[in-house]
Length: 337
Picture 1 (cartoon, rainbow, N blue to C red):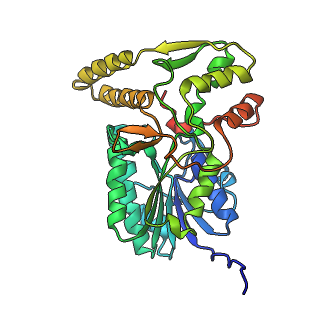
Picture 2 (tube, one colour):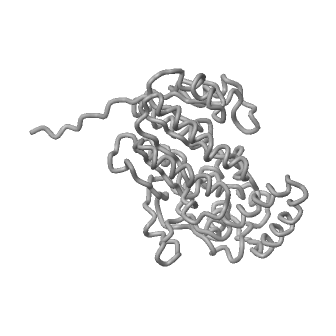
Picture 3 (cartoon, helix red, strand yellow):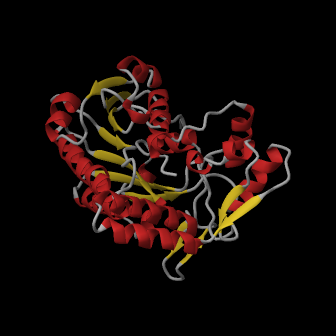
């Protein structure tokens, strides 16, 4: 009896959020697996919308590009799906700032509209990149993501909801600061939180594999990267070691963030733009005090052992490459601080 595995047939996959670093990695993984990949992108993508169509195409080799507006249902249908049939909708799309208006427009409304258009195009499976922090929702973007997760589950479409831990780019913002001789900034003692970071390529492969692995269908999938959970202090210590310098840290009291939030919140009642800044400060406080690991609902504690490891590249591997100039720290439009 033969044990040869029959390869899964290629699918027509419609991708949102393809121009972000994780989106690019996911498209690479989809193309490598033989899928026909169609990406709906903005006419001008990249940080500040500065990239041309030619530059965008160079970022996504092997994929078909279509230009449109994901926040416009008519554009989704006419510029995106174009009346064609697709098998899978895969989204790496996320709001840029996490501010309430942005979050509900992108993390929720745009996804609801995209799912409706996808169903009309015959899509029977959606792979969604969500976030592990929605386990403890205190912020607008977390509530918006959860609202769409619920809509997807209720839609009848096969779903794979991937709640990923912290990304390398979000933990690399202080590399240049240390290069310039400044101390590593910590909140509290630097051991308040921990995470199991995951690389773009490891996450992209995981998302692509969700299409062909039934064990990942109709499931919410929390995942972390390989290795042990890492605290901010450990991140700083490794960066100094890689640069051959003695560790230097500056501790920022969490109460300082509380004061900033209170001031901005009060002023935001009069000046709306300051209300958004207050939300950004809340986001900063959340990440300063909450771990990006699976949350045990029985104990209310984060559990590194219960956070499934994925991939092969560690954050410290990435740090070493970044310091040597072999990896780019691209925080893009999502760089809040």
